Structure formats: C-alpha cells, structure tokens
Length: 330
Image 1: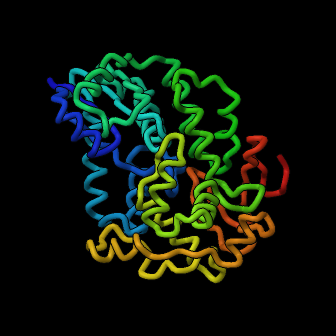
Image 2: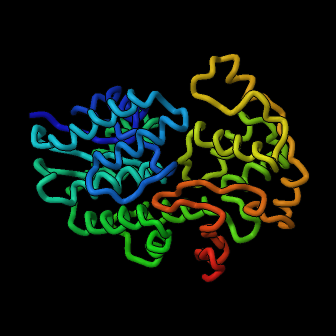
C-alpha cells in the first residue's frame, strides 16, 4: 500500500513532486471562501453545491468540475487502500478552510481507515526550494482528538446561516490549529464594514486606485503585498473588482472589456490588466466615510453558510473586532 498526501492545489503538488516527496498526491482545489458552504449530510451533497457554484461563476465547465470533485471524494471514501494519509496545508484562509472540511470528514472514526497525520506549514508550499520543503516533514504530527474537536466545531460554525458562531471562535482556545484564529478574522473582514459598508478587499481596491495603483494588474500585486497572509487568487480578486465597477451605481470607472474570465486569450487578459481605473464620485465619498456602500448596491453574496443580502446584512466592526447584526445590535 502507498502513502496519500492531501494538499491544497496543483502548485503545491508540483513542488512536492520536484522535491521527490514520496506518495500519491490528492489536490483539494475548492475555493471555500467563495460561494455557499452550507450544512449538508454528506461530503457529496456539498460537493454538488460547490461544483454548480464554481461553474456558475465561469471558473470551469460544470461537468469537468463535477468529475474532478467526484474523483476526489471517491479517494476520500477509499482511504483504507493507503498505509498512511498526510494532510499538508498552509496557514492562509484558503488552506485553513480546506483543512477544516477534511478534518471534519476524518473526525468520524470509520473514515480514518489508515493512520492520519498533519503538516501545518507556516510558509507557502509552492515557492519553497526542494530542500526547505523536505524540512516541512519534520512538522508531521498524528491527528489528535483536540485537533479534530476544534475542526468539527469550526467547520460547523463556518456553515451556519449566522456568522455568530464563527466569530465566537475568536474567544475560544483554537491552539490545536495555530493558524485558524487569523483565518477566522480575515474571513470576518469580508463582511461589510460598519464604517463605509465595504469589505476589506473592496476598501483596499478603492484606496489602492486612489493611491495610484490604477490598473487591475498593479492593483492585484499591491493587494497581495498588503495581505499578512495572502489567500485570494486573481480570479476571485478580479471578480470583486468587476463588481465594484458594475451595477447602477459603480464605485469605479474605466474597466471595460470585463468581466474577467479565466478563458481570456493573452491579448484579452493583457487588455484587461492594463485598463486605467478611476474612482467615481460615489467611490470617493464612500472611502471618505460619507456614503454607505450597502445603500447603493444589491447584496447577494455567500460567506460560508451566510447568505448576505441587504435585509440580512451582518457587518464587521474592525476596531472592536465584533459583529453587528442586521438590526444594528452588537
């Protein structure tokens, strides 16, 4: 029997192969900080929801996504054919959410047909040299009941229709997952702020354009550099940028040739990346705190299990690090 390594995506897997790390590699790939992640009875039920959402976003062919996810789920149902399973994940929000889903699945004893281990890396796998990547193997630890317990509570909280349980994790002992607290906080910062109704990413976009990062390409690089732990890929970032430039009351102008698509040819992609962006009057007054962005847009966004709409607009107070309910109560 062989070893299975479960990790975040293809860049990590390619680097592991280059480092000649033994084992079959399974990539999780799902962008769980985007779209609905609701409570379901089985892994396969949530997989169907996720595949449909990703296809709806234009991030792949629906049938192809379903096939990839079905193969992944099949491997998870057949862990008994491996002599050892190692989860190898990074410290950012993207990875921490994937890790929660997998650990919740493994928390059911019958799913752990093989000895299971975890490597929680405090650095990104893709850029590591082969030597440094092999050093990560020294971090390998068996899954503990404390770790599985934290993961179950957190994964259930993330899928809740209210963000209160997710925010409550900031007050609990989550040291079994040392990078979880920062991930929880970063996700909460994607809720509309109490100050101007923008998420952290949206607020950065407007302030970045004002600061002179006035093309999508330059703005994305600046955004990545601004993040303590970068987690958002270009597809997600440009989708947010397109939203800021669209609708009846845009916050940005100059973004023609969109929305961004991963199927752009090189010329289309470069044209999009080089567009000159400008703040509209609404964008300027919003970042000045004189307008509330929520009042000028139709909210329809999923953040985990929370379906964020105008009538169900949870907000985040970054100064007090507290949620504000739709009725205005802390």
